[in-house]
Length: 294
View: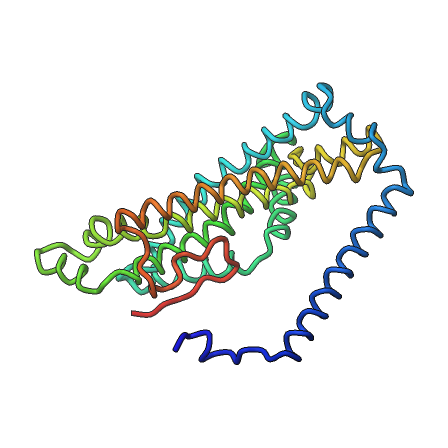
């Protein structure tokens, strides 16, 4: 008997008719909603051809799209490097044999996982600007990178911890039996395997970092979303500009997702990927990561 037949009863004729009616109603509702949105856009002149063709002009790309995309990728790249370092340090800190270090690392990770990214951007931008930590040109970038590093680094730290916990206990015991200290076992045996198993989740976290750079528009960082706003202001085509930039974000993030899928399949073929039934090391960009126990 299949699991599906155990968990769910096969729908009868009346249930199938009801499901078909509900599906048809949902499709009609979605079509009506899309039609109403398009009608509203048309009434405001946002669907006129010239509103869209200007998005493919050289001036728009050289003055808005390309500079905004470069700023987005710049903030994302710096945040990725720093978040990886932050995650490795505090992830290993949470696995430390020293109770004080483990407690301090846990407090830091849980705190920055709980604070919204946008709130951290506001706070760090205000702090940097008020105290003159950086120049006025650098403050927005510094605020974006700091917030993304603290939040995503905390998520990566939890991925590191859960990845190490997912490994068989016998590996750590074998390392100790040949004379290695617990820190040496962590660095030489457990951490490399945990990073390999977590690689798809880590690649997926890049999507979260890249998407969250769009929050930088709140602290005047000239990234891609800010470029869309400037295009809408300059050419009076706000809706097409936002839709166009959204498509660019979707394409970039989809590319990263494809990379994550290929990495996961390649690791699975090599037999080095995360085991079925292992704790949640494959959570991609989650706001809360599972906390497995030994």
